[in-house]
Image (cartoon, rainbow, N blue to C red; front, side, top):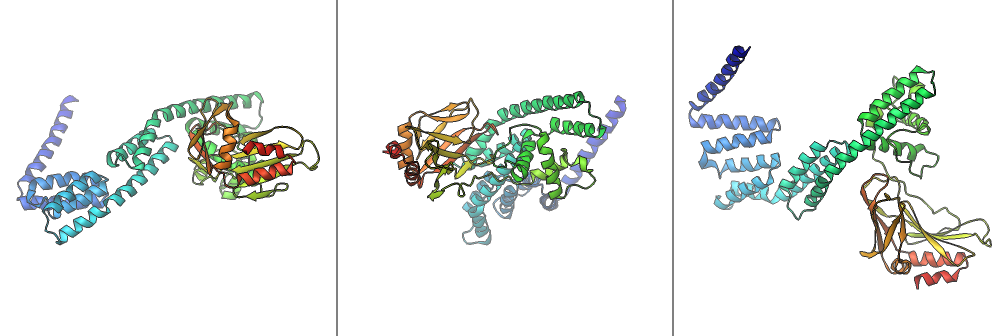
Length: 451
């Protein structure tokens, strides 16, 4: 066995050296032409890195062409390989020796002028690839892609900072995915045990549950959550409310999934009783649908009146009742990053009878351990985390900020996605809506809040 292996290896080595020796016996210009053919072939096959390595060999054979047409070919190949630093260095060297106004000079100048835009386009595409890989839990690919970005981007570029931030999150994301998969496995096993305890007669249902369990064990829980958001937002009875965070479908969501299959035309080969069960095809179909976060609409609420980006409204049928409620509210104008299930709402409320009022943040719900960063026009306002809800520490300072400010931002770790999220609220129209709220409840004392 060892002798045979040695003979085969020797034959391979001999063939390699024999081919190399035969090639070096060719005239230099023939070797150069052969390398150019191999470079063209590598570029045709999309192997720019291979083409660059061959160009290095060609430069050794024809050093006199290093700053001529060979340099322009090297620069274009470096761009194709994503090595913009090398492309820039080659073009700078070429322009320093080329005759000004010549074809090669003009071609190099045009390529150099477009280099920054091509770099930004390539780096933005790589950043999208990294985010897509992150969503799929492919963290080795994430690290490889982000490292390529950091090697090419300038430190002052936004894409550099974003790549650095994402790369720093990879260890935590690995741990989160592992923990989520462990939880999904445990919950899937619990679901299977519950099915056995109920002594389900239908073996077909048990088989479907078993197939689901295998998917829960291997799929990214975020992909399952994405599907559940789509189901609840399209077909849920309370579609404006986010479903409870969970790595698996609830029984109430099975008819929603069946309807989604019908609407998507994904029912081929399935019996009616199978439509409400998860499989990989439906996960992939949902992954291709961009989720649009729900934005609450209060324009049809009782006595609603819009002022800028705020709405004043009431809750209750009898305006003379003591518990008649008046509100001034607004919906977030932006949140980063997407997705979250819905845009949060700030609601200031008061009742007709009483000496106080309250401020409620209807969603967002932050992780209970998250710090809260509340700012108005960039100035921080003291706020704390109260079991996931926002609690304003300095009420007077907050109200004065709402009256005089333009934009409020709220930042913390989302309890839904476990990612840092920033919400932005416009304060345009707040004062008018608040004054009308006080008027609707006949509570002029509320105006002291903003004085």
